[in-house]
Length: 391
Image (cartoon, rainbow, N blue to C red; front, top):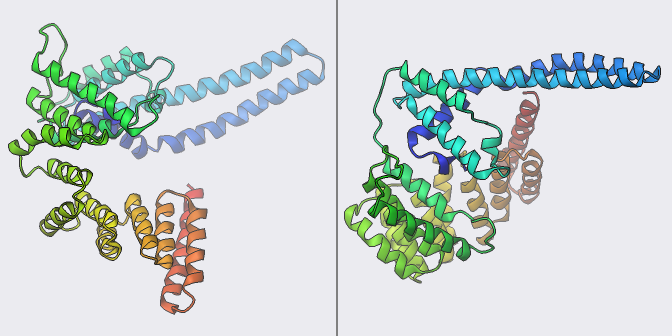
């Protein structure tokens, strides 16, 4: 949700800088410590209320209990406000040090405030946990004016990613992918109409050149057509982008996806092999190649591609998930459970990871070396779980 409301990479970076400040200043740990101190005071107030209640001092008991709860809530809110201010201040410094404009933070706050007004009582989680006020925006703007000014060139790649997330997202109230795609088609076409005939009085995002915005909207429209199973319209919409930037990977991969929808998966696999030869272990290419191989029942080759990818991206959960599915289709049950264990471990589900490793151990009885590695991995899971619980 957050990515869709950040109009630029710099605005998204401002949020990441803010969150990094929370981590560097140990705000969560400090809140827990403060909460523990507050709990003693709250407990004392509650006990006093219980004593008064036992003595039939009804009104006094209620007042004591309510006062203790109000004091605890006020303490929590005070710490939260202080932490947010500190994260705003330090986050902006990190943002500028990274080469982004300081005013991006205030612009992002404005986006969040507008979004909160749009959603009303149905705000997404990132808005509920990070409330924005006019005074917070003003503070960010004033602080930005005191820092060195920098310029930031808008990123087409960021806009393409944003368009892709939009096109692949589910529209509330729409049951199927095709129904959601129809709504996205309308929105991207409307965006293109506005870009072709801008109204002088309408507000525009001056940080994003119209040419980049049009390219992103065309890309999103082509992808939405593909999601709606209209591959001919998708190819026609994508063609001008490919002509303008024939080496743009996002455009090439979408064109390959269109090949698959058009029923030419063998051509798609051939093109992906060629890309993989020039950019080995590229995440997007390798995943697309493996998925295309699976659709062509080339399970063994898909295993090799994903095995190589797990070495360069060992912390990518979706790679391990696809790896486990591939092992299953190839009939390799032992490696299926090993890969599924890695997937659950990266998701923080220690019990499921341990369960799959235990099952894998059962299938490795005749191989001492593999069994030893699995036992070692089980010990790793136990250690990680204990470490996590002690944080």
